[in-house]
Length: 289
Length: 289
Image (cartoon, rainbow over all chains, first blue to last red; front, side):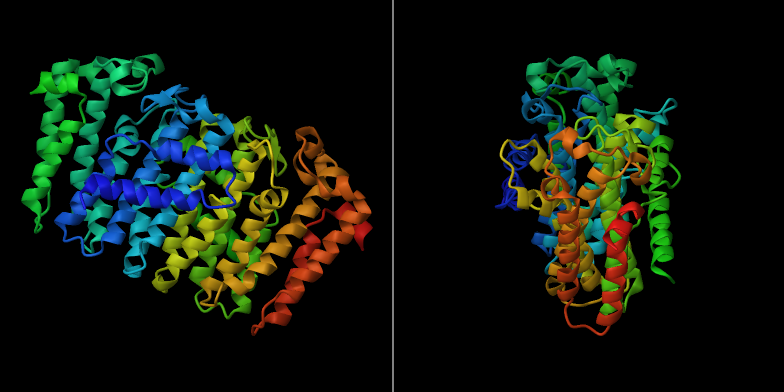
């Protein structure tokens, strides 16, 4: 099955568990709303691509890893949009979860999605239970403290920010989890795959900064110019659009060069180059071509 | 080692992982603040008591299960106290996390504690990796949707509340997790242990209702009379103090009767009766003696 279809199917099954009979209706609806329709599903695609390059000998395990990473990403979007953080009214072209369901349900939706990520990993481990502890550790490291997305968001509350730690945790961690968990779900040694994810995470951060500076709200599905409004560092504001695009292409080349030796290296390289193009919205893809 | 010391030690080691070098200082401090000093640690004590009754052949695994359950409990307290829920300024006799660290850090502290719970389970599974999937499933079920503490809290946002589902999810789920995960961490079949946890959870809920109605803030470390203020159901308000105490004792007897046959049943029975007495603050223990 094509990656996109696999990802939607496994996310649908995961979310169905959370909306099982007995669930409070508002929470169940908000959980599905937060996950569907998705964005480009870049992180779970990357996870499956790496698993495939490593032989993908247990598709239930790699499906679960990909879903867990996307569920954690969705959780972070729901919480980051809350009034006490970005106070963002829109996400993926529709009202943010707190705008649609209220703040209490938005907090709980994020919580439930974090729990669901780990439940999904456990459900996917039936055939290869010996791989589960490592997968939980790799995914947990990308989500919590000291260096996961939660820690990344917490840097925004600090008076003195370690900028590298901030960006690595806030964006890089989940990309790195996508590559290491993809490898681990296929029984490969995960750490050699971390650098690929870290480079792609940094590339994605630059692309996100470019979108924030250079695109209109209609194109990116959320308010533009938020970094300036919120006083956050932005590579495109610092380097200019051309400088940021150069940096993006350099990081993509570094990522491709970081692919460890594996049976599916050539196919993976092509997939990563295609996925990296999706980082940018159409109006900037023309500029960068 | 005595249960209380074991629990503090394993929680300390778990929290130390979240505050490792590189963590944003505010988040790291808030995570420790949310976990220490604790309350009576009733849930992890129950978990260890059940593990011991089942032979406790892997103390690292039962320690991890107990810690995971307490970390999830702490996470739920941090989030439940937020302004968008109970807006409670005090917890365990000191300012609530959002009052001490601000709302953004409080949201992230809860998130990080949820992640840490699952990371802790995985770290505890080194000797018995085959038990991990079941432990993650049992603990996840108690934490998320449709029937965990997150779902329990979400019922408070519903116009029509299923009262039994609400109380079972909000309080019962984590007590049931304590007994089933305690059994599973010792390699025993978990489901026969669920009824014991469910009864104790209901008993604890009645005791909590009694404390809310009958005690002063200084004794319980948080504002009294909150259920009336927030329009929540309360057994002591419905049944009177005497009726609620009767119900509490009946539930404790039911719990003891629900202990499955096991090598350590007699010792467990004594421990549960002692723990149930701790549910009540001193002023009500005198009334109920």
